[in-house]
Every structure is written in structure tokens, then in C-alpha cells.
Image (cartoon, rainbow, N blue to C red; front, side, top):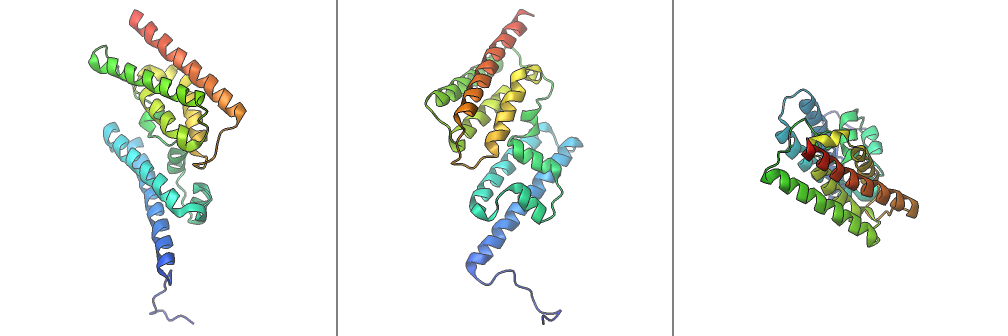
Length: 214
């Protein structure tokens, strides 16, 4: 029988201690994302502060998920096991990018050097991603970083909120984000992804051209 004054040890070996500490860190990161999302929704932090903090936390989350390995089958199971009722954090983790990227705020791009730079960078991101598909890149760890960069650049354009391609790209980002690093898209998925990205690319230029005419 354990005395009330006796310390309860969660581990007996260094390996067990490492597992406990890793899970505790993951718990802390998910909790931090939860409170950051709440603060952003209340306008308690600026969009710039939120974006930087959220990007950092999501990166840390991905690192910790690799460290826990097969011990945690999914973030949903982890949150359920530890009674973490944080739906906003779960949604942000599933999307994989800050809300400022998923839902760009109203602003103007401008026609100066910065606007031209954004157009060039986003165009290059489209080309790079489509080239990756042509080279038969299919695994999450090959496609996810490229699509994340594409969606981030794409979301800089406030008009993208109205573009059909935005929801398609974010949807694919969520799909890839939910896969294991080595998991690959099937042939039908790859064909649909290529179709959606090519359509988003065409829509991107049509929209820019339309804005220039106004």
C-alpha cells in the first residue's frame, strides 16, 4: 500500500522518463496552441504576433510527433486519452498552417515592388509543386512542405478568399497533414491533386489580370 507521503514515480528507467517528458512536452504544445487560438479570436494578439507564434508551435508539434513515434497513433487519440477538449487547437493542427494563412485578412496587395515580389514567389511555388508532381513525388514528406509554401504565398492575396482554388489547396494541405511522413497518395488522388492545383494556378492569373484591369 502506498503511503500518502510517498512519492509516486511515473517511470523507473531513463527510457521511461524520456517517454513521459516527451508526452508532457507534446501536451504543453497542444495546450499552447489552444490558448493562442483563443487569444487570436479575441484580438488579444496581433495577426503578425499570432502568425509567428502559431508557425513556431506547429513546427514544434511536428517535431514532437516524430519523437513519440508509434506510441501516439493520432493526435485525436492523444487528446482523448489526456482529456484535452481543445477543438480549436485540433483544427489548427489538422490544417497545419496559421489561421491568417487559412483565412487571409482584408488588405491590399499593392502594385509596387512588394506586390510584384509576392506574385513572382507564388508563381514559382505553383511551378515547383507541379514539377514535383510531374517527377512522381507522392509521399507526404515530399509534397507537404511544397504545398505549405504554396498555400502560404497564395494566402497573401486578399482576393484569394473568393477564389475557388483556395479551399481546394487548403483541403489538400489538410489531407497531407493527416498522413504519415512515408505515406503516399494513390494514383487517383494524385490525378485529382494535379487537376486542382492547375485550376488554382489558372484562376490565380485570371484574377490578377482582372484586378489589373480595374
